[in-house]
Amino acid sequence: MFTPNHYAGIISTAAAHPAVQHLVKPFFPVDVPITTQTDDEGRTLFCVPEEVENALQRQRKLAMYIGGPMVIAAGVQSKGSLLFRMAVIGLGVACIAAHKAQYQMVEKAR
Image (cartoon, rainbow, N blue to C red; front, side, top):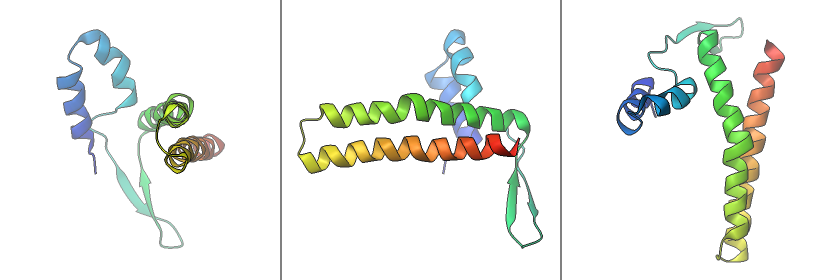
């Protein structure tokens, strides 16, 4: 599992140029204070500050509009078997659908 400190390491080493950090940093919050609480049904709820959730929403949009379609394009252009290409395309579709559902769930709760 990646931690916020892991993302901070990626930003500080692989993207050391200030212009790149300016573009990448809004997608990867660092030093995130995560709190937990238990609801009336005994479920644990993980709570993050609004600016962190906003960054997560940006990540979801990136996955929906860029990542998923790129995976679909890779599947279409693949020289692999039909089964392999369909599996890659299916992963792209699943990526778009999952991130869209998560994005809409958060937007509905706002």
